Image (tube, rainbow, N blue to C red; front, side):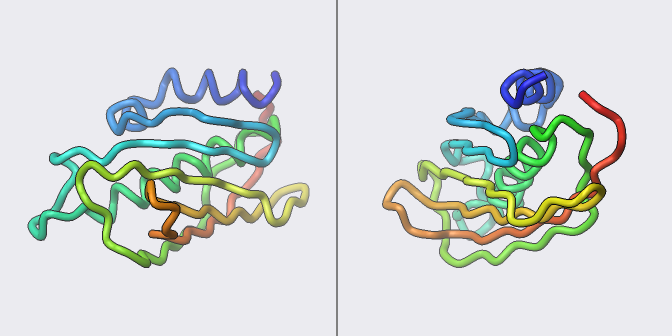
Length: 134
């Protein structure tokens, strides 16, 4: 399967990414770009987007980018830096780039920007690449 076919299969079974309203903009081997709009029910008690929303967007981009290589990949460590507040109605774009690929381990960097092209979060993830193919 090619990268788009793999992401098609993953996304069709990913109820959470669908609930978030993720829009697939581009995927290719080792890369993924997603977009979503922050809804009011995604906000915390401060009236801004819950940090888990930005994290989940970045995590989905990581999942699609890392699995697009053709082998099942599962995260083993992730981290995020929230750099700016995200407001309800903001349109967020996550872009996952592969930084390192070996037989069993791969490293990705995901940037999340708002509609004004402001960097709102920086996410890094390491995945384990199993021998199981898509």
